Length: 510
Image (cartoon, rainbow, N blue to C red):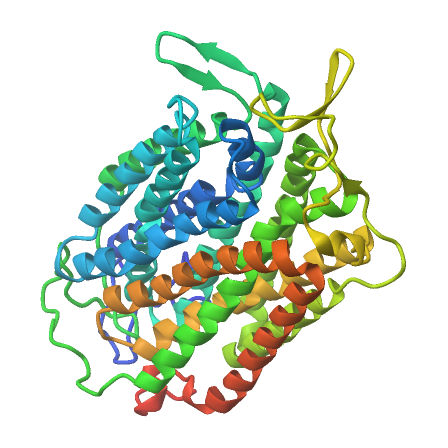
């Protein structure tokens, strides 16, 4: 039975006929199987982002609790370790998916993520070097999240050119939903408190720091079950016609490559550079949010985790609205113009974060005063029989004495603008990249793009932890503005080359 042609961007009604009368592109059964498989990939992307975001606002206070020797520089390495693991794994899983059924790398990667999430819940157990165990746990979570390349390559290969922008926007929306619910779950888990409940039989402390990672492990198990139960592999060309895949081969389909023309390597490299910069600056923004607000507004650890969890959740909601909007706006403006506009918005967002005025942050004297006590899991100032968590900008950061405060209104406004520009840039980068590759196998290409993003998430936290600690927010955000400005110039230079493979070789009119 054949269906009528519906809106190209409606994922429930892709094209079922080709331009040739009587030629069936896909049956209703194939259509249903293809889109249910794509939806499982949406869920996998969601869980991948949850694995990162569900603990991102609590890593710093958790690190301080399990190992007082850890400083903000080491925090940068802990956060970066996730992306370093993902950077190593993405090309490997992408190559694997090009030659074997995609179910294999998906199940293996999620299994690694589950094991690493459990390890994160136990990093408090060793008697020493706890910060290094946390480093290893986050690196393995990142390695398991290297399946992002497999997910995006599958969706790119399972959608026609007209469906691609919508599907990529949907993937990014589920990724954003993970970023929403991750910090939101963490904010809810603060109700458990830092002590929580201890299960001595298995030596597990269930508290506001460990509960989120254990929840991530549970969701990973659900994801594996769905991959075995629902996921089937499909591959279509730019027109929506089924072509051969590892475990799906419709009768009468020519499995030969549709085109022997080469991919534009300059466009590929440029897309990776732009994607690196976009992820680099957003990783900086994620990393610095908790230390910045603790320094600027004298928030406690619990307050910083709770408030930033709410803020990141709000940014996630904003991002989903952007993902829905770009599917409509891109029809009129095109992907390249939206990418340009998104970068401009990000630049304005970081420019607003530059400190100004004559109000300075409260100074935290805990490392200087003689009343400081160092014999517990926290650095605290003592007063009688009570312990008080020190708050404010640490006196050991010399810039705290001469750098004006970043007002809360500045911080919130910047959050809104970055939350507007980042999702638009991310969707457009992925969409343009998949279209530039065209009918070629996309596993390795997507692996390199994911690796570029992971490298950005590795270097971004390290860069900001060092620059923020030693130079302060003025120099840090000033340098970021310069980096984003350079990416705008690069985009303008390669603007005409960022076009779809089929358009470049005249197979489809733009």
